[in-house]
Length: 210
Image (tube, rainbow, N blue to C red; front, side, top):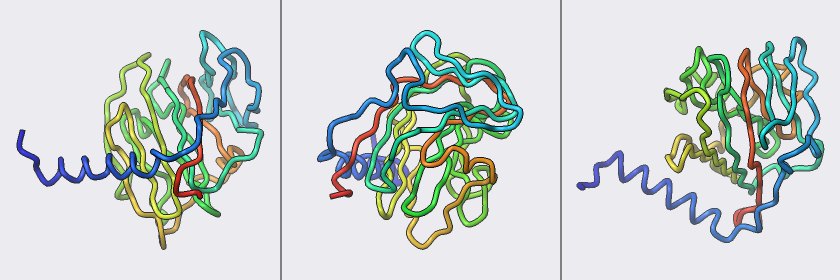
């Protein structure tokens, strides 16, 4: 198969991510599969129920429903992986809020009526408007593998081993779209008017943090 410029860029991003994470530390589980140990229900107004069922944390249908990590978490030089599914509804499910040095950002999965993927916000523009914005159809009930790598200069993200996010954040304004998403800091997951599931959550430090 001939290597097009677009495919070359994708391959380069994959190799860059592997290089950044290959010397990372051991993966540290963040979910025991049976309880919310280590997590707190995020106190969003109008939130839906949160429970653990079939080895996954379920973020029930509400205005915004989420969980927030109750421990410490690094601001940069880390990698986190998890599986997520949209179980009911048609908006974003188990989208992650994460630190980027002294700022915070969110990686939206399936927003804007179900298909938009991207970071919110960059330079004041949300996931539907900035250069990370893409669209993807998510099958109801299917589990997708997500991986996020944050270094002092880049944010990279994969869905099922496909590069979805790859940007340099140095010198760019990184922030959360809504004030109430601050409730998910330092790390959290949220769904909007949708029941989302998240499982197999783990993180590790990367070589860039040394």
